[in-house]
Image (cartoon, rainbow, N blue to C red; front, side, top):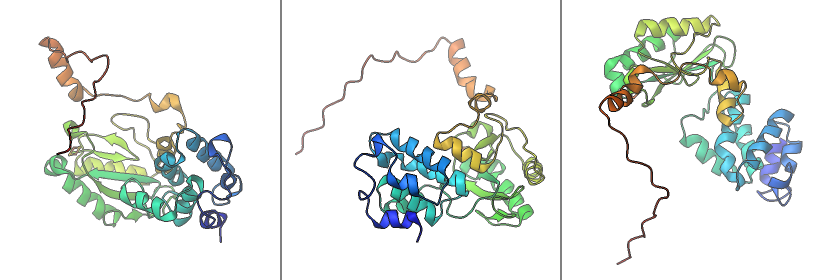
Length: 263
Ligand code: FES
């Protein structure tokens, strides 16, 4: 039995000290599933929130940065760290699609197949990549985590409809794709190359992206060095400026309307 299992079985509050915010909990000091650096990062995450359970979402991303997915050990690590049950952590990990229950490739390719991108070619892009990689949706070509391995998934709207059809690699955007350009991109990834995203930070890999999402930027300077908002996205702003339109001023404070009386 791992120490993670033991910590979970001992119950949420037992053996972890009275206040996790005042020091590193026993579980984090003695757990063997994740290394010392990861346990220290987990403790830092817990300390960022008034209630430790609020750290669950970033903690799951931290687990993915180590494992490339959320394993049962990862579930137990989160449960032991936060004083939750494994069932509570599993409920969250299986609800959000960003938490992977199968090992991911070096890169995660997410093709938007939501309505707008789909009619512009998103479905064709996904089909082309699926045929090329020889995997179905959520499948991984190559040994998960090994260089050049790629996991393919279809994604709901990625909030970049003005650039459709879009795909993301490790959550970085590649705009206005076609089956051919997507194929070029993925074969480059398989060769170990990292083509520059259209916007955003330089491409890294899935695990590094997960570490950043967890709240630990690897390189804060390059993380914000890439191109940001696009011409298309700013077009509405420019039009408003040209025609003298502006948003109403923000109120100094928001009145909270009273709740309607119960009848
Ligand atoms: S439908 Fe693809 S980004 Fe919105």
